[in-house]
Image (tube, rainbow, N blue to C red; front, side, top):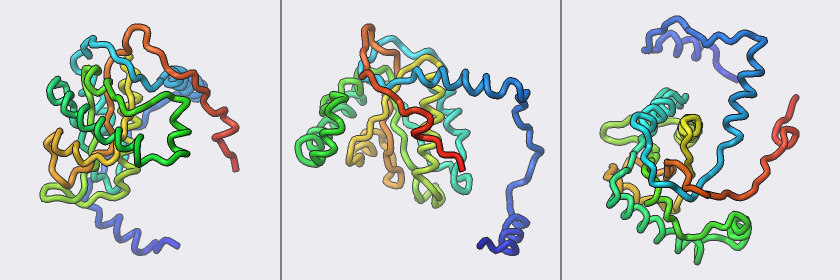
Length: 229
């Protein structure tokens, strides 16, 4: 049970000033249509592994990161860092290090069950998209350090932020992929980040290559994922 006295005391002692809420006003008769429209756009989002060298328009990645930065986070610590890599040499280093870890994963670390689950998708240790995509965003969790406070619900907070990042990039017509090599410590060196930052996602960003193909996947039906009580 929540101690209401303690809660009232904490709220009374809050250091953030308050401002009037300015909610987004949507007429009730438009709400479902807007929700469906957003769904229809996002339903076309697919993980892409083949990228064009076509450059990304100026400002798009920056606005996507701004959108990700609006995500809720535990105690409003905002425990994330987005490192955008466009330098070809650094992308080459990233690919070499990631493929070294992936070779170990596919050869020794992954269980037979895990490999069987991946088999229909056709992935392996080769990760050319890390060089081919015009940009790669490496997302770090920011933990307690000399210039950063202790975070709360770090993985949950960063995960929500990444979801908004992917949605924003998709809305701009760009393709993405969420790559999670394991372990990821090599990314601190490649991205020149301090030890209190821990890599969580590697996200190539760009336009799909001409003729790019993706697995013919089916998403679960609503009655498989929605429970009403």
